[in-house]
Length: 525
Image (cartoon, rainbow, N blue to C red; front, side, top):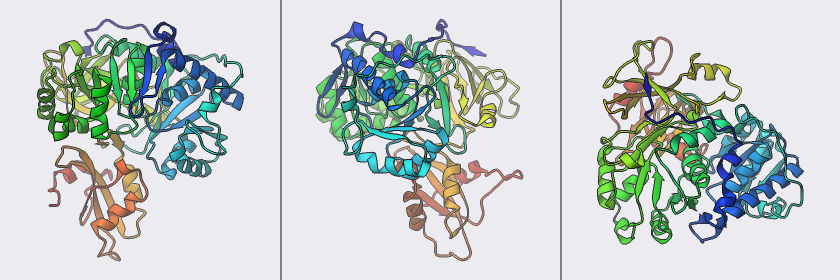
């Protein structure tokens, strides 16, 4: 068993809004959130006051403890206010990908039994359609403004009393993001107030933050990585968060230059752009002190190229998953120069790890031996919503969460993730479940069978690749037709990027698709 070198941290038994904004009065007029496109700024005092007023308005509208509110928005400076207002009113927040189709959104609404939606006007049509498909949604609010819908801006004027909700941090669910786990379709991950707040305390010794730090939030808040690293963690410590709604390289570089960003939390595609794009040379990025990449594997050579170009310590990595609130490993800021290339970091405070044999999961492995990574700690999720069997398959009776990732630890305690048992595809940090795409492909009248695997493109991104068996009645079915069929029905990040036609999908005797065999086959030219 491997244990963290950091001292254990006590459980943070506070509602997440108190754990994050509890020092807001101390930080007062310090800028908390800045819109990176137009400069609109909210101070800590304003974020604290605004979220309390919106919480009062939500409670007046009927939001009660135990309700689920769907937060469906790109990154805006209103997103944190909506999140903390909902939790203060007693609701659990299920975060929704802003590019989700109405059908995908509707499934999440129905599965989570969400009764309320907060969205933005450009996404309103999708939210309305999703609500119709799911049923049970009482009201749709907007962050900005839209005819016929109450806005968070109007709700700031609410004179209703601030809700006083008894929250049990150890049991009550604060966030309900959706994850595919190690396989299958997206499932609601129940993360309690204590689990999320304690994970922030676990991360603090390795990646400290405070007033004067400026963090650029370009990765999405709806994703647990963004929610933790770009929203909860910096706001807990008085740092300033500069918010961008999406990644556009020129806007991103201008924000670093103009707002004197000190720290970047990114995914590998952004590291690639920083390392190789000629536009980078046109901007002053000298304020940067560190770059941390997570959400997908980062090539060690690419990391080195990025740090060399920026004149920074080596790009650090972090590791975790939605089911772990999400962090378990990170390269500490004070150890970036000593970390071996390719490592995802060391165990954070209060976290235990085992590496077990793939052939005999009861056998623990030592340093240098590769096996499945198991994690135990206060950040392990409460479970999957309404799926006790899936929860039991993920977390064993001794509390160890089976990540589905394969890795090894060196003599210095550094973890290297080398492969995975799980079938999940990580496209630019977003989770794509092969089973979800396979089920969709099989609804096409010209497809007899299908399997989806992840393959790497020229930029090193893992992309969905469909292996399709044509029906005898559709001998002319083309790659373009298959790709278009999928593209019309899923969010852009889930689209199939390549199609190979095969005679049959290889399967084990149990019927399980042999994905490794498919991945080993040569990609089409």
